[in-house]
Image (cartoon, rainbow, N blue to C red):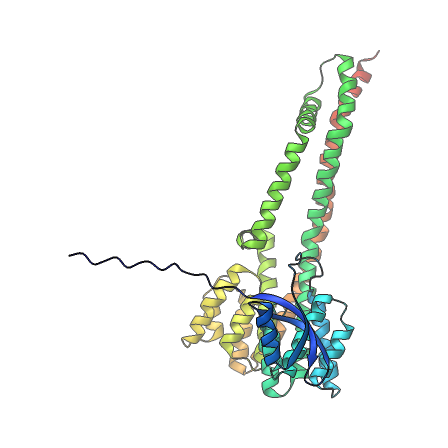
Length: 413
């Protein structure tokens, strides 16, 4: 006898929360504004009422283009430094947040600061309030939490600002070194395209009237010009589509980032630069977190994320697991080929002497200097090489078009 089939119940998708912007009045009669996550306007109003806010205006937050009014790292650094200064001067946290909100020129950051201020006035602590916002890193949240626990929030905020400035300086140096050759390459492509589309066809008409056989370089350039002119829009759409696809992969997945990270460890000169910059970031962050009293395993995890390199993050996860099993940090790092010998040796000395934080700072300072010097050296080598490449490409096109004229000049009696 077969059992009767039970009717299948359809799975109902849980409604997702939306972000709403609000303006209202707190229990103290102060005007407040900010953002809150809720399923609907009614639920947002109920949540705000529980927080002691009488909402006068609530509306759904519109999706913004990522690069429009984006919160930059310098904005966050300036915010923390302002808070540190005001707290060290004896101002209450809510008052300091209010002043920072007024001084901020970034609209998105203003809204976030207002929301944080409202959360704190409703009974939340600072670390929990900023943890709700993706603009603040996990490292900043952990350090602020440690500062609140130790009663030295102003000192910790100053340390966060100094740490971010150091990392941002190194990041800008690396970005500048990478953007320069890319910019010159783009200029070379644009100039060459203009020559092939606008200039070469003029020469082609002149050469057609001559009726003589053209040199091989001239025929190659003319063939490229004809192909580009005939299929210009198709090729432009293909290049645009490829660029859009790469941008999509970069924004939605980590495949492009992982590919670049993988390549950076295989190129002869770039490999050492990558290891030194990652070691500098790791050491600086670990010194900051460990010095703030963050547990070593959590500090290693946060420092791994600060390297911003997939291979180092994965490797440091394994290092963290070995430290959890009882190994020393230097011992666990020595088993990897990613970490330079000096880094491991300095950490070992710091562990033995009880001066780990000081040694980590020295490692970071040393590799910061090494990276800057190596970038300057690479830039001085890249600049003439790029000029030569640019000259060969553009000059080659121009020379190829003038070769028939030179031949005519030599054949004239």
